[in-house]
Length: 127
Image 1 (cartoon, rainbow, N blue to C red):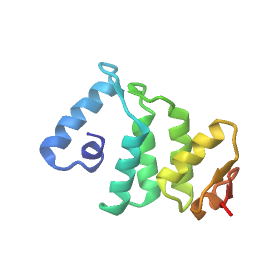
Image 2: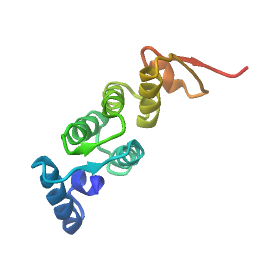
Image 3: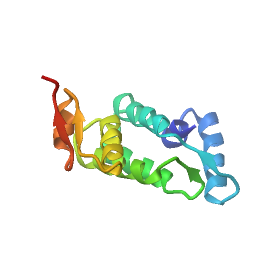
């Protein structure tokens, strides 16, 4: 539903998604949106649709900000979208970094150098 709303295609599905989001905006309905769903949406928008990361981060952040969008931890997702929009890192890495920072941690064991770009995260590689 999120992808159909943001891409406005295919028309029949996007119209239904738009009606749901309109109901969310009006406070008529609340929906649960999981971060894993957003990770998939961000990946499809950037890889298949080739939408620039800043535009994706902005569009998804506007959706997440709606009062009727329920998430287990909206602030982590908002932080991850900010990281993703500013830096050349995968959204899933930005999300993981935001979760680490929210937990008061700073280290991650990973071979993925994306984490080196994220302020506050110290990447360590297994020896």
